[in-house]
Every structure is written in structure tokens, then in C-alpha cells.
Image (cartoon, rainbow, N blue to C red):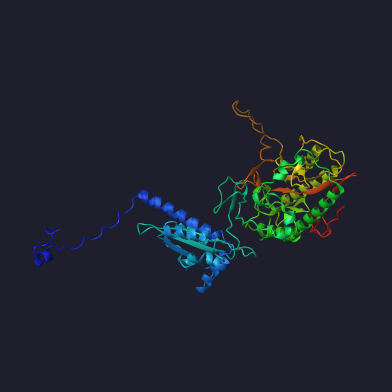
Length: 536
């Protein structure tokens, strides 16, 4: 230490050196920059999905920001700019803020960093991804929706990676519940972003709201699967092998719940119109069910997330209600099941949405209805269950449509599904005869794909491959399952229609427990013809 000290003050003064200037950080290589861009894109996308998962964000959070700047979502955009780590942090905070008492409080950290910019100034031409943002700015957006632009600054100090998300408002009474996410794996898994899939038609899944709660007044009718999703009593019941015969007291309970199911379905029918979401139909069904002290049977049955099935256009059955608005020209099937006094009541109908439904789709709906009516006419003591499929398939063929073979009618009563199984296609192997006291559903699903006459020869397939079906039959009745594990769609993307009644075999014939009431809204071919016929 002594040797290192200067010999004199003068020496010390002359020997002092100025500190070296800090070297600039090295510029990232092209590969590193590309990796950082990908990370920025993921962070921006994740944050945008977190915001979009709360449909009340636009009216509750974004609207005051626009108003403060004297702007509207039609002429301005929300802009968030910052580093990748900031975007990741905001996404985590806003998504996991379980203590927030309101949506405004949940997104408070984000709002403090948002700015409102005129659409004419968005995006900056120097941004990477500017073309995508520019297209979103120029594209038509749903009324009231807002554009969120996320600009992520990269470490080189020059590059800005931009992306955008259209935030669609959903100002429903319970839209504060969230987050709304995409359903996967039978309702046991959820994702913020839409799944990938080889979609067969134009329909895409929407975001699904959290599961609705059931009041304590419905406790006597809550099934064993309400909490864990597993219908254990149903699975272990001897009724899975042998159809039960209802006693007069049990038949009275079946009539009561079936009538309630009819009233609930009629309420849902009145709610169907362009612009209404299937989520709203689910709310109508849920509230009407619990108001009667009943339990909506689909809710958490094998993890199904909603209180009703809504099947739009190419959906064959088991569609999950979501935030997609119904469009003028759609068809939608609403499948209602309620539990009351320990018995299930199950029925469904297909409705037209608006006035622009194509003629062929209207014919399809009428054909599905008539297939059910003709099958009911067959029912009575001693009738064979297998003959139902012959009757349904014969009428569908006369109309030029095809019968879906994957799903069938079923016994119903103290459980949602049990014996007998009742296929709707010709030549099926269903066993058993109808007996007084048997209670079951018939619910044919009719697909639009037409079976045209074969006009060309099918080449002989190679020996190592199984024979292909004739070209005229391919896609005629087949269906596929969406990634949510529930939604079944036609393999060719064409529409499907369905009607369902709950039936009780009597000593003299059959009783349609879910028959339409004089107050039921008319189906499309009944409009202008007066009220629906009374139940018989």
C-alpha cells in the first residue's frame, strides 16, 4: 500500500487518470434479435389475450379513457408501449389479481400505462408488424369494439415489435365474471387463446364464461356430479343394462319435470334472435331452471361447463354456449335438461335466426322435426326399438338428407342416460321391445349433406389400403369432435338439425311428455298458423 502511494502531492496530481468511458453494449446478432422478436410477439399476444378475456373491459375500463381524451373507439386506439418484461409482468398481474373487487381494480396497473392515439397515427411506419396493425385499423370492426395496440421495445433500442387485438364488448348482466376462456379437453382444461384445429365449416369456438352457481334452494335436486363432474350413481346403476319401468308415482314426477323442461325451452326460444350470444341463451335457461328450484342437468355433467347445449349451423350436438353472437341466417339447436324431484326432463328443438335462413336449411329443420314425429307414431307397447332407426332413416332419405349415426336416443328418468339406447339409422342392432312404463328420448340428428347418385366409377384401391367409401357417401353423415371434447360438427361443414322429445310408453300407446304447449312460440312453418297444438 505504501509503495503504491505517490511520493508527493504533485506526483499524485499528475498520476491521477480520468475514469474510462463505459463501453456501449454489444449489438445483438441477427439470430438473437430474431429470438427476441419472437419473445416480444408472445408477450404482446399474451397480454392482449388477458385483456380480451374480460368482456367488460371496453365499457368499464376503456370507455373512460376515450372519454377523457374526447375520442371514441371508432376514431382512436389504445396503445401500450414498453419492454418485453413489462408486458409479461402486466399480463401476470392482471390475470392473477384474484383480490381485485372490480374489473377497474384488476386492470389498474395496465390503465396507468395506456395512451389513446388517433387511428391516423397508428401504427408508426418504422414498427415491425406495422402492416398487421394497419390492416386491423382499416378493417371493419363490431360496433362498440376497441383496438388495442401493443408495441414492444427490443433491447437494441431501435426495433419495436407491434401487434394488435380487437376487444369486443359484451355488456351482459353478469359479464364481470371472468376470465372468459376457450374450453379444451371435455371442460377440464382452459386456454386464453383459441385452439388449432382443421375446422370443417365457418363456425369457430368463442370464449366461454366461468361456470354459473346454483342457489341453495336447488339443493334437493343437485346431482352427485355437480362438484367433481363424475356421475357415479348413473355409471353404477343396474338401469344401464335393463330399462326401468316407472311406477305411477314416478311417471307423475317425469311428467312434471318434462313440462318444466318445455317451459324452459320456450323461454330460450323467445330469446333467439340475431345479435344474441349463446351465452345469453345459457343465462336465460339457467335462471329459468333455478327459479323453479330445479338443477340444470348439463352443468358439470362429465365436466360440461354450461347449463344448456347450443348447437349452431354445422354443430350436430353438444355445442358449448359462448360469446359468439348469432347471425341472421343461422340455425341453432337448444337442448334443455332439468332435474326436479329426482327426475330428469330432456328435450330440444332447432330454431331459425332472423329472416335470411336459406331455403335448404329451413327444409332440413322441417325434415328433422318430421323424422321425430314419424318415429313417435311408431311407438307403443310391443314396438321394437330398432325399428325407430328404420323410420327416421327412410324419411330423411326421402328428403335427401342423411342421419348422423354417432349419437342416439336413450332411457331417462332417475338418471340422465341409461338403457335403452335407440339409434336413429336403419339396420341398427338395438335390442328390446317397448313396454308400459318405459321412459326414453328420441332425438334424430339430420345432416344436410345429400347422397347423390354415383356418376363415375370408383377405382379399385391398392391391396395395402382398405376399400374407400363411394364418393357419393363420403361426408354424408360423419361428424368430428372439436378440441373442447364436446362439440360435434359435421365432417363436411354443412348444417345439421335436431329435435327431441321425452316419451312414456303407456298401456294404450305413447305419451309425449315434452309436447309443445298452446303458449309455445311457433316453429317456422307454424308462423301465421296460430298457436302450437296442445299436448295430448
